[in-house]
Length: 84
Image (cartoon, rainbow, N blue to C red; front, side):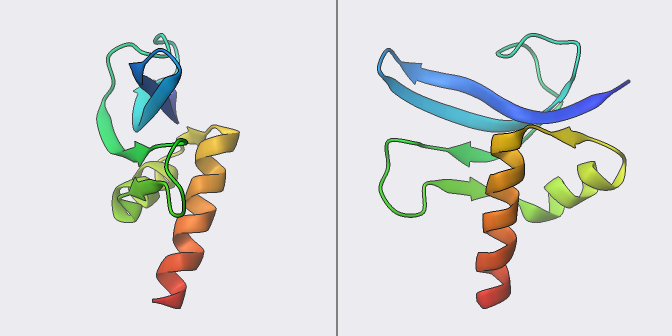
């Protein structure tokens, strides 16, 4: 099974809100997922994401492929965790 880490759209029209999820890459964008890793709110100012880095690292360690946006969020989360 090929696993992807990608965004799952939630929220209302013109008010997007996303869950960061580990999902079988053959499933639909908003279909059933394996595990929720965090959230991303593009409408929020400042730090607009929450992610469980340990869970994300676990999935990346077993070969999950992140989308471009999720890879960017993970990169930002790693740098903010290193500063703290």
